[in-house]
Image (tube, rainbow, N blue to C red; front, side, top):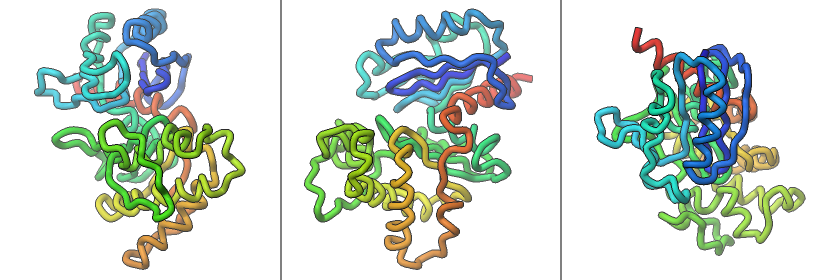
Length: 288
């Protein structure tokens, strides 16, 4: 029996199940302050006898197992969670192996194992929502080095007609600062869900995301790109990306059929939490 946590800036999704994606029970908990949120997480998992737990967390996080702060959420702007010892806190409640990575990494793991990139040895998963993050699997391994990738904070060229100053508290007009859900709301004065009929909103969104995808493709050459998160539920963003990406690439490399190459999550809203269950099993296997 495995536990999985997809810890997002807005909500925690917790599930119990197995590494094949079979979920016994799944709940959502609002991400408030650590004491409140983690109390509910513990209450949920205490109802089961777990063998391991996998965590996919919003970041930045410390994934270096040699570090004194391994398992911490580090420089997040999320109130109350900066320098929070996530793994250590969970270890105090559950004496089981715990796997720890980013939420987008677990989503990538879920999608390449059981979802839209199943059967491939590389893929990229990007979430566009409250923030923008991305995980990559290259040659069957989660991409990680000095730290985990933070692809949502790359710089993109501003559209000539876009005067919005950006929303990122660190970089202002990076990709996340220009294209996240909160950036859309601040630029246009309303939530994206209320702007569905405004084509200019989604064309601009696709313009910035296409720039980011161009860079990711040129650097990582993934065999599949999966776009998830609340903003990507507006399917017109995909059409905008399909339009702008070839224009930006300008025939420098031959792109595959874009509607087959750049897709939504095969596991729907469960990519992250299913990936967390898979991570829990992988963590357990390493101890055998």
